[in-house]
Amino acid sequence: KSIHSRANWSSDSESDSSEAECLYHVVLLGDHGVGKSSLANIFAGIQEKDAHKHIGEDTYEGTLMVDGEETTLVVMDTWETEKQEEDEKWVQDYCMQVGNAYIIVYSITDRSSFESASELRIQLRRIRQAENIPIILVGNKSDLVRSREVAVEEGRACAVVFDCKFIETSASLHHNVHELFEGIVRQIRLRRDSKEI
Ligand code: GDP
Ligand code: MG
Image (cartoon, protein in one colour):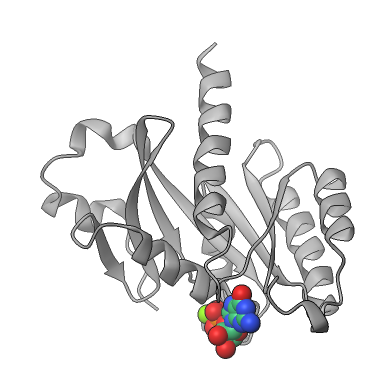
């Protein structure tokens, strides 16, 4: 696993050093198979060809124009729950520490992934107690209507309890994926702007 810190790649970015405060790490969390990598790949593809850099095996940088303002996200698809070996544990700990925002993904066709999402939210709250971190709960695979195990209302209710945003996406159909990343940018800005006051 290659996880790149800003220090590793900022040297080759010529234009954005003055906008360093506009760069945020967004970590994808969720069970294996829910669609994290699919969402990350779409994020990478959303960008103009040369406006994003593939900066690591599972890490993507891209700049989004949202509400007339540019924000650069570093999307990290480094979470992997299948691997429980000790030397992979640090990656999970790192993921929990490094994010400026989190996307917690479950599959609407897999109730156990929905339960895992709740556990991840609780874990995150425990580790990052004092912070008010933006989190979006994502019910992915909304195209698989006939295999649905988690109702939209359940996802929405869960998000209310956990005090986070909620969206259903389909990585296959690219439905709501752009909206998801725009939503993360808006959540980050809300926190930032309220700190300035
Ligand atoms: P990850 O383990 O969370 O990274 O999940 P992947 O992105 O590798 O996706 C796991 C499988 O689910 C792959 O076969 C994807 O093609 C499929 N998949 C991901 N998103 C969707 C979706 O929105 N709809 C459908 N039908 N399949 C999806
Ligand atoms: Mg993956």
